[in-house]
Length: 318
Image (tube, rainbow, N blue to C red; front, side, top):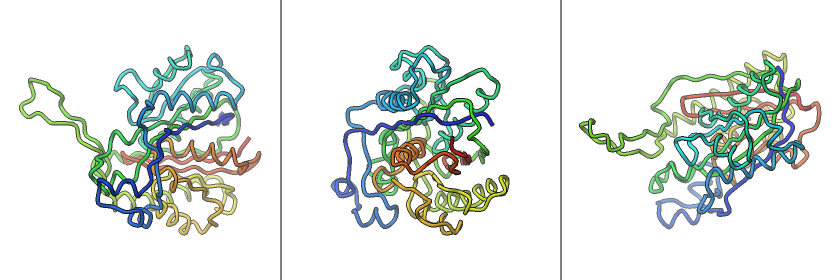
């Protein structure tokens, strides 16, 4: 499989919101949130647009890769929704970077970054692209009901990016989608269409928390073991597990099922909350910055999200 990651970047809003602040307008507390999720704070956009955050993360990734916008052959943005329904967030990022390549969005919810890696791998393998920029960015603060303590406390805003080029790092990738719309969704309304008998307003993000938790733990265990079996590895042969940062209890349960030490499972959910598709690339950028990944290390990434989607990939770092 023809892909390696040669640069990563991240960008967060300037406003960090701690659990105590949420209790001013919703029935919750730091203890309630921390015990159930492991989240202590999240970053919320108050002035920054998603395009701005995405472009900042993209520029950081390009700088680390030693490339400029003119070197990029395609821009993929993994997002639920950018600053516009149309044009795509990828086109907005392209404008900010003054790039001139094809650009489009991928919506696989929290699995979006890994879905985008697979799309990028296909373009690289055919030789149609040499360098591809992937930006995963979400502004979840726009989608949640800030009066619903079961949902609003979980999410944050931010962007992560990666530059990929041809290489031999990607050893395994598998994507799934159940085609399920009930457990986790946000429904769009009808607008002011005069031909619709009953006008329906936009809804907020809705989630069946216990069902999501069960699906997450089961899918992580299943998909990670499928990846290990396909590569002839055990958990001991993986240096780092980078899992979607949705809930610390989910991470702990998955780690216990896999029988691996805590040090192999980096976590930043306590600081950022769940940033959907952006969570894995932000985490990846942080562990690279900390020097926790070196050439030859085996890195397994796994995500799950609305759809219900899952995505798993394994890289032997180059």
